Every structure is written in C-alpha cells, then in structure tokens.
Image 1: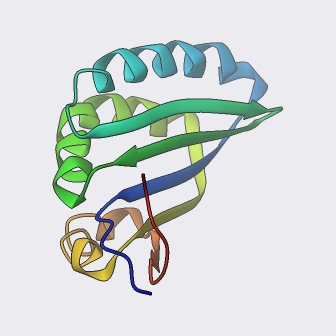
Image 2: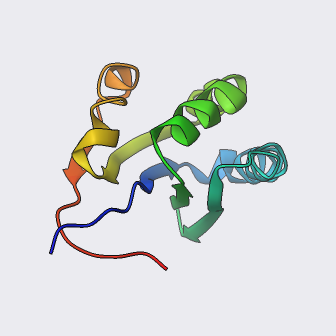
Length: 120
C-alpha cells in the first residue's frame, strides 16, 4: 500500500567541539523559538550525545521545509561557523522530495524516498 502522506522530515547530525557547545545551545534556543512560529512545522527539537547533536524536525510538506530554511537561514549560517554537519538526511515522498532536491543541493543531503506507511 503506497502512502498519501506528504510529510517531509529532516535529520541533520552535527559535531560540536566542547569549546563551542554552550554557544551552540544558545543557537538551539533561538532556532526553536523562531521555528515555533512556522505553521507547517510538525515538530522540532535538539538531542545531545557528547559532541554530537541531532535536530529532529518534521514538516507537513516540501513547502514547509523551504519556508523553514528561509526563516532560519541566518541562524543556520551561525551554527555552521561553530559546528560541522556530519550527516544530513531528508525523508519524504518523491513528489515532495523533487521540490527540495535543487534548493537544498548545496547542503549535499541524502534523500530517502517514502514508499509505504501512514501518518495519523
């Protein structure tokens, strides 16, 4: 059974040196505050394990993802001055991923195509 779900998830993993972790956490607070206003954001948050950080985020569709990047672009630039993206995955149905491949190509994500499932 194919899915009709249009949800797109972004899974970035960052490495942050101990000397920058407090500054990174302050940026996380600002990112959460700014993202909270986005109507198509389903969830957003940061998880930590030592020097590794994961941002857990989901959006109703590709439009929500693109709006998010427009909204937090300047903060993301600040993040990338003190942290390295070690892995970036984007998951969603192909019709939505097709809208993201070109605009997000500079980040070099790995795209995973959703084939089966549901969302409530």
